[in-house]
Image 1: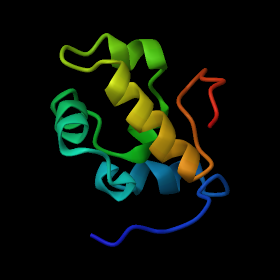
Image 2: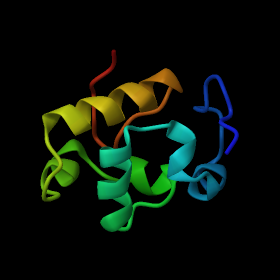
Image 3: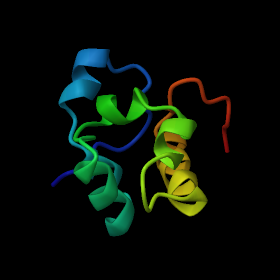
Length: 85
């Protein structure tokens, strides 16, 4: 896996829909939980709200914080999320 560095906010939705979740380099537990719930791409993840993620069994505030931080590192955020680092 080779992660694309920098700001991804200029990427099209189609690009993000093809980028694997692994490119975010999330903690293993968070990544596995998301994959189990059918979130396989960065586009899938960005289509979720913070509330959606917290509703996932075993996904708590620490996982949400990791997701928010990794997305923010690339200029992205969750659906409806005003949080920025």
